[in-house]
Amino acid sequence: EVQLVESGGGLVQPGGSLRLSCAASGFTFSNYWMSWVRQAPGKGLEWVANIKQDGSEIYYVDSVKGRFTISRDNAKNSLYLQMNSLRAEDTAVYYCARDSPDYWGQGTLVTVSS
Amino acid sequence: QSVLTQPPSASGTPGQRVTISCSGSSSNIGSNTVNWYQQLPGTAPKFLIYSNDQRPSGVPDRFSGSKSGTSASLAISGLQSEDEADYYCAAWDGSLNGLVFGGGTKLTVL
Image 1 (cartoon, each protein chain N blue to C red):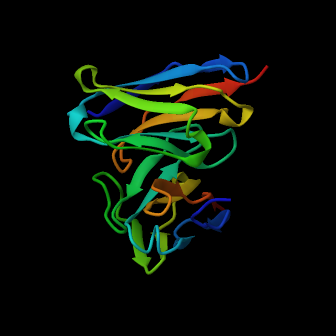
Image 2: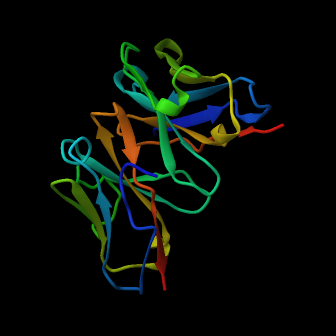
């Protein structure tokens, strides 16, 4: 069974940093593109970034370029999102997702507030 | 303002057929396949339709998708109360080099 479990969310002040992690199991992690998708409270889905199987290709939505960094460790079956210079508008549930995306984690809430 | 355009709401009575539209452009729907997602309140999105009209295993055949040009549609037949949810379309955008979503359609079963 495919499982994606996010962690690392929480309350952070504007300008602060946070690192999200996603532990993957139930499939061969190194064979798939992986993504982060977020959803602000009461709003729709917004794709944030994705990364190729070997990390050689990475794409970001314009609003996070230069502030967020997606990475992966295939040996640990893990996906990461380093978030710096956080803003109030980054407040959202962040989902780890596989490929299309087809499978999604349950999400971790990031709240940026003073 | 989402890159893909969906109606904010849709409704129907049990047993009815409803359709949800998703409009894009040549850089997204016009040149890439469309996926659809169902999101029940308080839960993660669920993969509903992929490659325009394919259903993952476990998705009832009441759900169907189609695509024509730069638009796509999701149809739900035999509407049931448990279909009440938010529905999102998505496609890769070659100009933006990113995945784009529709703004979502809230389906109400009357």
